[in-house]
Image (tube, rainbow, N blue to C red; front, top):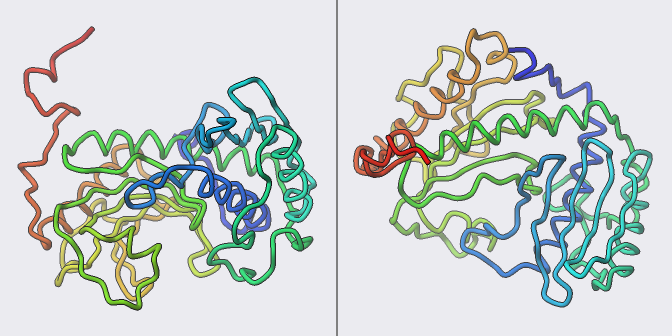
Length: 312
């Protein structure tokens, strides 16, 4: 079970996390610039591969993808017509990474200019990536461990997503907050004030209940599983959560259901405990928001009970 969820203390790789987060934000902005927009920004996050994370194919002439390989610790840029550029990640500052990414994109025929080449919603958001010589820590063992934990949580979220038949996002890795999540949506539109920024406005244009995992930050310095309901219905925090280690936590003016990663590692069946946590958080939000829990239930990933017994 310790292999399923290995030790992942925030402080032990805080500096490497800060570096990789900024690498990912810059490549994420390439994805944002070259992909067709989808509802709730579903076009923007990364997806997982067998070795790291990917932008997925994007662009038109040429079509290309950018992949992080967190086993060999390389960045790969490849086009569908066979052009390829790759470089190693350890030892690079964010400024050096920026220069090499620009060179690589140009080498395979991609416009290397990225709109707003600054960190998004990070403390150094005023500093361009090209001027960041501060962040260069890269612990290869810690980065590989991050990817392996990410892969394990990805499959947990896929299993949880299969239990519901309504509108749901892909399981995806956000470069904004560096978390991995899946979100369920209701059909109810959300009226938002004019002061709400465009990113938030599109992300939360419908009622949602979201489920995910993040690796920690300076405000919450430990990894944890989480869930939230937006808009937050009255009385949400009066609802019970499972397992017993889970709790409601105030954050950003609202409340998160939180299950700390280290608490899960101590449980006899961590996989089942996380699924129980997500289910309890979903039912808490869905009950308080008046969602049709039974109508959207999808036992064993099938909407037709006869299909659940099918095998090819």
